[in-house]
Length: 162
Image 1 (cartoon, rainbow, N blue to C red):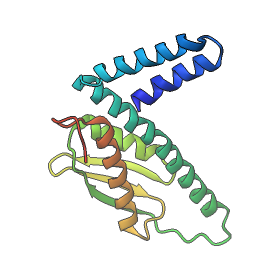
Image 2: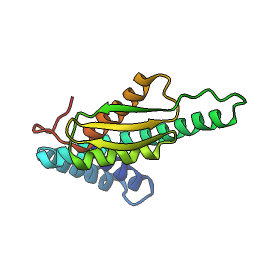
Image 3: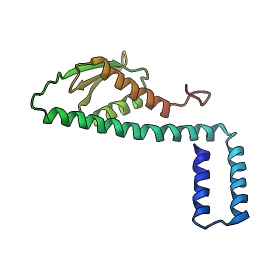
Image 4: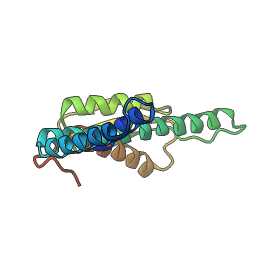
């Protein structure tokens, strides 16, 4: 993804008329060699992966907020409101205080959900869901959010995540 960003930037510069003929080709070749040499660096590789995962997470989360907004709007505009609000307890995998705070904030940003409390002793996050008829669905959404955040923000020792 990092290499793709650099190559696209060079291609746009060439298309804009900044580079002509052999200059564009030699700049492309030099940039490619530099990227290949720099790609050997574990820190650059880890940075590129984090940028890639972040660029996947942000549109996904925006989509989740839009879907939740539509669901809440549908509930508000319905003639017969059939909701079952509930407090759902979800045990988080990562108990880092910063990660738990971020998950709680992102859940609170999502319409129809509100992070209420966190019990650090067993890693349980309490969430108020506007419509919790399918409690497993609420839990799976929280797990998906947590997994995507961990995939993006918590590097592993090898720099890879499965």
